[in-house]
Length: 462
Image 1: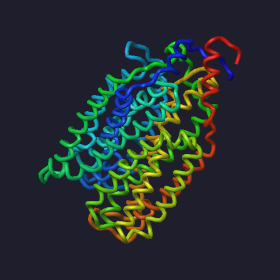
Image 2: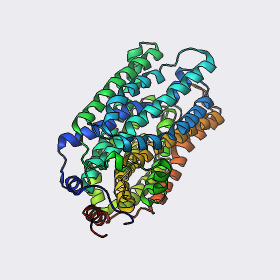
Image 3: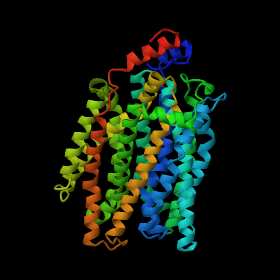
Image 4: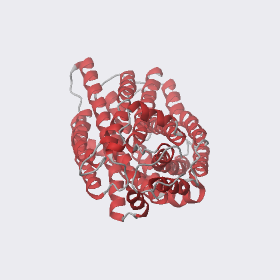
């Protein structure tokens, strides 16, 4: 350990010994349910909304997704530092859930309500609302992610929390992906735009409510005082460069969210143009999240047995093989669906670990550099989400545009592009995630790091 930890002995002891109750654990999981009621609506349907409802050419949303998300992503480290420097009666992270959730819900509605302002006007409106939605997502999601290492230092408790977070995320995704298409049709009664506006109002109200539950039930127990985290942004970023587990988590997260958003974005077109089964949209998209619920239940004992490195490599290998097997099974939908379910389950198990990997990097940061920087480190996950969303969604839009896609008239070139984006690119990205995971080296080191942190807090030589 290079530096002496500044936290007090009582903080360390409290953070280690506290066992979280079910109410608090489920309250934490409600936060990702809240996020995904809005964010997965964007990932699964915004491209379709822009092209088929708002009437924007496919290449324009592609550029919009890429530019807006990359501009938006650079703010995440700043928000992370803001969290680290926040001090108040509600803690460092919880205030953001209270005050940013309402604007997040409102702008989610505005994003799916593009007025008829002409092509240039609609583009400007779409850019501003999409960019603002991403900023507000960071203002709730970075603090939300930062809360986990503040709540407990126990790695098994954190894995349970990560599992519940994955379950909350999945429930939100299922609600959105399974109900949105019929919900919009029912609410719109022939006016699709009205259907989208009313549906997003409902999702926005639910999102705000679930964030309020997280705020009310969760507590921050283990965190350095804000004045002890006041190092410059440049110095803080340099410590990230020396935090190998964080770099692994960041790369793993970027690749994961590129793959996830690619699959979410192309599945609507795949079901319509390749499978010729419009109803399959409300089957395939919810299964991405539904299998993650089971993954959230299985992940804690699974990773306790195998560790994050070996456990991830095994899960990704299974997902890779079964995803590749889906292509020759495409013509037999029951077999295709069975392979899809098991593949997405295996991949979902790997995604659960990512939430707790960030918490592990906070512990490493404290052991290695003497500062926790929960906000800054957690901003990496939000940054990965943004970059992954930008690259994945824009890849679908550009792929469709280059292949000459037109709504209701899918050419052979467009069909080929859709298949490549649904089958081939996700396989390459799964291989990339496995390559990143080869560098993870924290398995089995948690007790040693905690012991040395606590001894440093007591003023002992480490």
